Image (cartoon, rainbow, N blue to C red; front, side):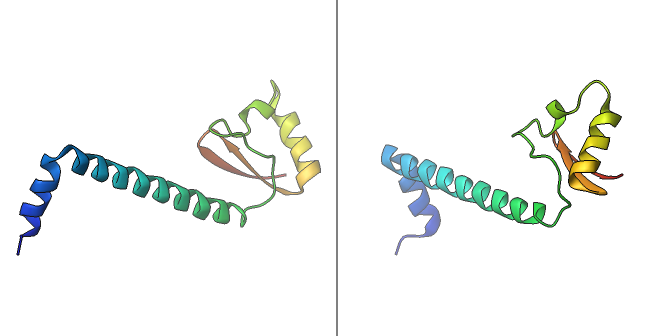
Length: 95
């Protein structure tokens, strides 16, 4: 019987073995990312309503030179509690 360490070194010595290991690693990282996004989207559903954020930028482009005017408009549209995401930070505002 071959020990696991010996089997791993045999796989790593062949070019096909490296390709398999890199493929498995890539697929597993992609699955982890998909699951993380799914969980985060489910958590976002529990938050108050707010403007639809853009990827990476969030709602930062929706805010004009006078942010208090934008926040007042969001308050009239979405209600007293509003959720907005500006870049990577989440904001909970009460109007």
